[in-house]
Image (cartoon, rainbow, N blue to C red):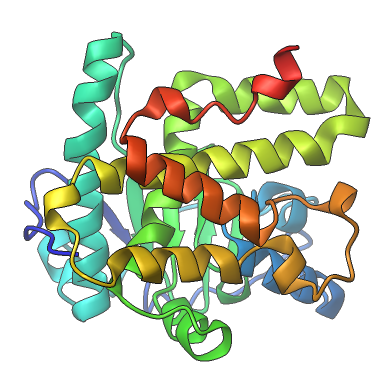
Length: 283
């Protein structure tokens, strides 16, 4: 996907790479079992790390940043970092006017790079978690090494597959700003039996929102991009990741077919109003 170079004044970047952060104290300790769970969640993207890694409370104080002291430095650490910043810039430019038209206040998210371990407003960040969005500090957290794992272990490579990850996490930011994320969490607490289904709907909507961004930048899509995105969406379906060993009612992110369907719908319609994955719950 052809993306313009980012404007350093239009992106909010944090960088924890090289900070030497380590888990300490009584909070945030992660055992082997938790890491396995986190790894599975990482592969399906969008997991809320709060429920997994911060049950004991994690010190979320400032982390000394050494990956880069300015947005320009951080975004130019390597090609994948720059690509992520370019995608963030494009996402901001695409979504800001939509919020303005809907008269909803818009605040762009912060993209935070980290390596191996870091901190977020939701607790500890670990590479095994993969990219995730933290609603507490409205940050998208990425260890760019995950993209190599995604390509080598999941067969989901290519630039569009990577920016699809960014756009999906940005979709969770959209849900936070519109208040939908809070509504979903309240509904999950009120209806525990539907908690997984509601989570699936939330994740599929984020996939659709990722497609809306791509659809609204259709002129920048190159041959093979859509296939890369759909391949990635298929690879991260709950049924594919678990080899069919998990029952559908236990899914938290949706099947491969569902993820492909909603990403495709977003691309084809380029209309965020078509991303109503929660319609069934209003009947």
